[in-house]
Image (cartoon, rainbow, N blue to C red; front, side):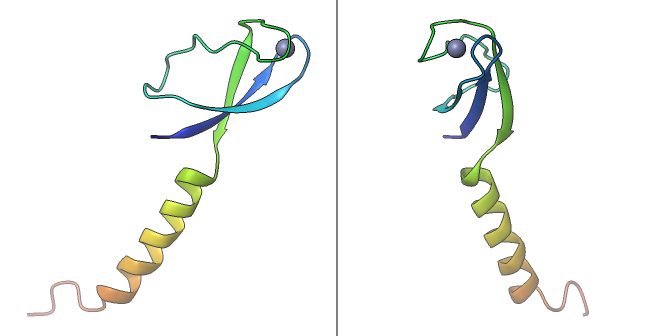
Length: 67
Ligand SMILES: [Zn+2]
């Protein structure tokens, strides 16, 4: 489940939240309750996974179709 970072447009509060659907924007600010929140970059969940899978595929797939 991806963890996204949001920023409230009203009070500029930054918070992160687990969301299942990308684009579902019924996220309200935990501080002021405003629905005017903007999704920022997906945080470490995607970042850590991406970095690891990249290095793994680079290490194990040395010969991609050499015959
Ligand atoms: Zn707010």
